[in-house]
Amino acid sequence: MRYITAAITATAACLVLALPAAAEKLSLGEISRYLNSFQTASGAFTQINDDGTISQGRILIKRPGRVRFEYQPPEDMLVVADGDTVGIIDGKSNDGPQGYPLNRTPLSIILARNVDLTRARMVTGHASDGKTTTVRAQDPEHPEYGSIELVFTAAPTELRQWVINDSGGSRTTVILGDLETGVRLGNDSFVIPGIGSSGPRDR
Image (cartoon, rainbow, N blue to C red):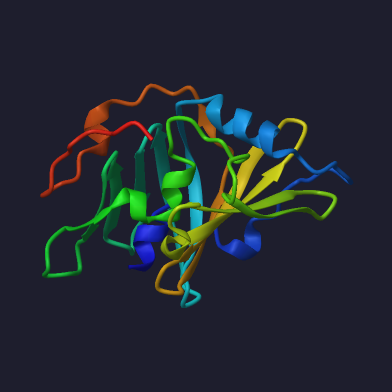
């Protein structure tokens, strides 16, 4: 289950961000506008799992509702969200592909068609350390689904990492490399092998 919440980028010790000396806290409206400013993106990621292990790979994002995590060896893993379902394909498992509802994962918050962090009871934390702004968000109707902590830098606004706190109590960190936005991504990249694709719903 830890991969569903990556469900989601060099070792973590080598990932040192070049941050400005100081930056004002980004507003929720500004962060929402940034997330809504692009439909597609791709880049490298490092994932720090709940047990402390580290995975690396490439992420593809196509909003609304689609994301693909391609893990590098020695991992034999693929995680794909097709708009409704998150599929986990573990080459080391004999159980076959596993599917879970996307809307029951905190990652669905930033994959929504229209991200609005100003919604009542969505944001439960909003702070700045002078270099980054961190927002903790949850589904206001279903806080039991878990939460996501988003970390941004400013000037220009960029998403640098997220932390998924899932309903089972696991914590997974995804550290992003530089995201290239506006890339051309076909829908075939977001078909879940062995499960198929039902396409994204409006959120």
